[in-house]
Image 1 (cartoon, rainbow, N blue to C red):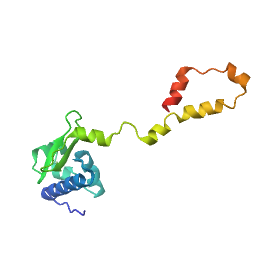
Image 2: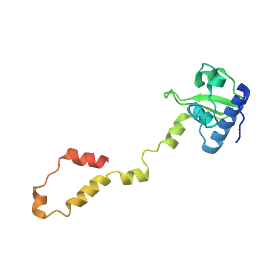
Image 3: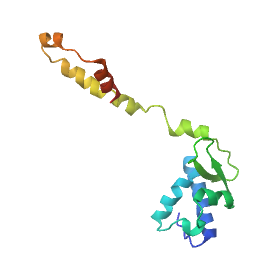
Amino acid sequence: MAHSITDVDSFKSYLRDRAKETWDSRGIPYYLSMVATDLKRLGLDYHTYTGALRLVQWAGKEAIPDTKLVSHPTIKAKVGLVPVGVEYDFSEEAAVDRPASTPRASLKRGQALIKFVESLSVMPDDAAAEFSVPAKVLIALLKN
């Protein structure tokens, strides 16, 4: 989506369009923390349009057409825009964005311990009988 941002109204239109685009494609708010990065790619600075205000302050005061401002109840930095009429609950996002453990991560976890134990299997029996490993070392290998 090509945007020509030249004034406050076109900046608001850009925010509205990005909020709708983000909602339609990902089902999440267009986080204000992403605005600076997105504008930088366009060679712009949001302070040109917000003045001395931080973006969250400006967005709280300004009416951005067809959007509403949503904020996380406990995480101050999670503030974003969603299309008007959308009911968004941040608890839904937590379940979608942060899975407890991915299958790949579960498979990788403990690989160092497995490799260590495999290397012990080639030790001569008399050496293995005298060998001891502190539990702290095994736990550290498991966490890697």
